[in-house]
Length: 101
Image (cartoon, rainbow, N blue to C red):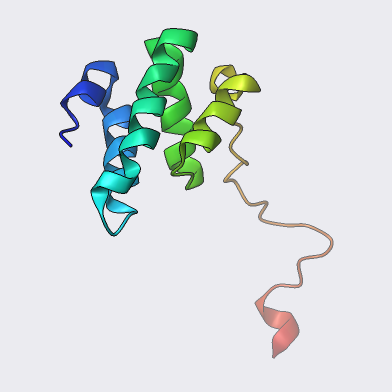
């Protein structure tokens, strides 16, 4: 199965379709999941499907049901919160290098 149809929705959708195909020993076993995934664009729209596929790929989800759950819960419309990457230099619980000498 070619990922050309999925590419018309977006790159993340095509990547997820390819992941579905690669996840099976025989790619033909994933055809129904791929078609179901692309059919979600009719119900939710291509933009939402692409956003849901992006979120699913970042979470390691490679299934039709996982993407459908993301769309049902409107998680594709929620901005992902990333934890702050700044670590405080000093804190009362940080002992430092001198403590271990």
